[in-house]
Length: 275
Image 1 (cartoon, rainbow, N blue to C red):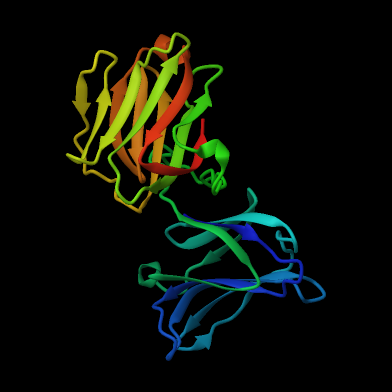
Image 2 (cartoon, rainbow, N blue to C red):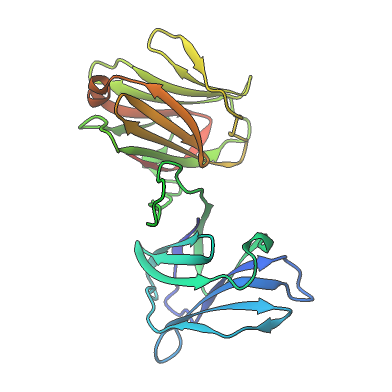
């Protein structure tokens, strides 16, 4: 999934998002998917097409436009086995079947009348098995005071089966560690997840200090985007990092229900925290 967050200028005529097979200027590279909203016509619309050997194929046109001049937007491009689906501001908008192999795409091009705030390349949640729905694309909050680290979020009703905690952000240039902790009303910390850059380990830390290493590749890198998902289930929490499931830790359901605070600290800049 690729997320595009931004704003359409008041005087916008058109913009395009191209999923390209290369980045050369001459000759022009093939474009597997060309997404082109047009605002300047009598009836605003969207064109999708494919450029092959510098020749455009047959246009696919959608007569309605889910974007407005002067308005912010969040577009999700969801890539399936045979087609791409697009949602705008949480609503399904269109789907477009591939005409060139998706494996050839290696460049994202954004051109025209658009103010880009954020672009995210996200993996599908490994917890959503068999789902055909769009993943939840929470907006990135850039330079938000509410996301300054250390960052805290209330859990007024604790954690219940099916609830997912989502963290997205950027690792700082010279990181030391990242800590995610879950606390109850008495400030006890029954659940702690810590990434240590010194020895490149990821571990669950028990309340009495015992460390349980997670046997998986270390997927945090300086100046790289990261995504942490915690899925609450009966008797524990399942962890995924950058779309890869990394197992679970056991926590009694009663303890999960009594949790009241999520706290994140360490060498990261946060863009999204959702509980």
